[in-house]
Length: 206
Image 1 (spheres, rainbow, N blue to C red):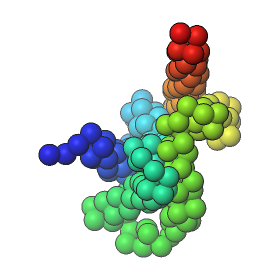
Image 2: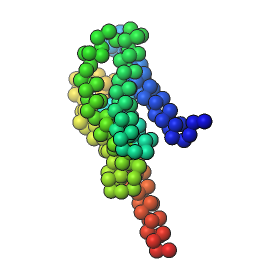
Image 3: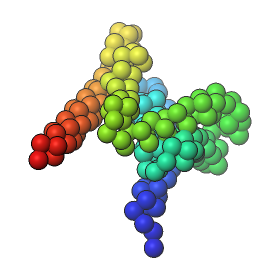
Image 4: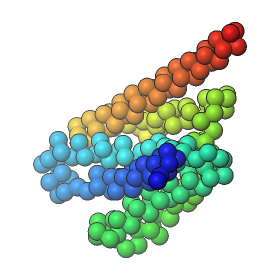
């Protein structure tokens, strides 16, 4: 029978596939959307596209993969495989379905390079986040802080006036969503650490 660790790994694998496929599907558009005839649908699709293709989300999948591992080396490998695996699914499904040209893998080599360089470190972040040390606290804040910072870095909060209403609205909704989720995760992490510290101090007093 599959143990708890195996079940968590299975859920991570499912998340990797879901991210790879989901980030592809939300990029499927139509002439009507591009011409401005379906602005509402375009805005909704673009919101999900921004979120599922956000760097924070892709970094988070590697952190999540590392977090389910019990040791640092497997965590680094898991982080590398998760980020690269999501890319393989994304472009693989795109090529197989004809949504992307055959040369998509080679033309997007920079993303695979980025995943190869960042996957292992992010996996380690996930593993360290399991601890209650200061490094663990810092590791837990990596993805949430990224979610808060990315909308500013990407310019989602301040879209140019020349952009359509659908583009500006979708950028704001995506920025707000990432920010709210990031802030909520930061508050949760801080409270969890505070509760653990309090419990530890009470145990020492007793």
